[in-house]
Amino acid sequence: MLAALVASTAFLTSYVICHAHTGSRPFPWRGGVRIAYFSILITHVVLAATILPLALTTTARGLRAQYTRHVKVARWTLPIWLYVSVTGVVIYVLLYRVY
Image (cartoon, rainbow, N blue to C red; front, top):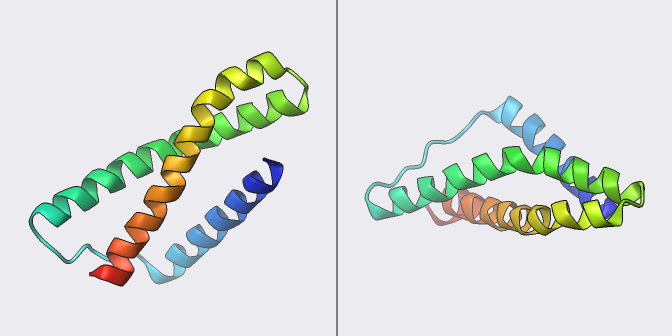
């Protein structure tokens, strides 16, 4: 789990640096695909913002051996983290590869 946290931190750092230098790209398509894309994007952004405090809390409780409290938060952290990871790839594919 610590390796996953380190990998996510490295990815977020590279993502922010890349977009600070290159800017963003508007989604080019209209209609249902656009609605689906923005629905995924909005949930991705909101949940990505919530994952930071959840991941830090989960990690801190695990490292402190507060396993009962760790599990309570980890039950929420893992599915949200997985959703954010998968939707990030979907957004990338839709924006830069498919359209």
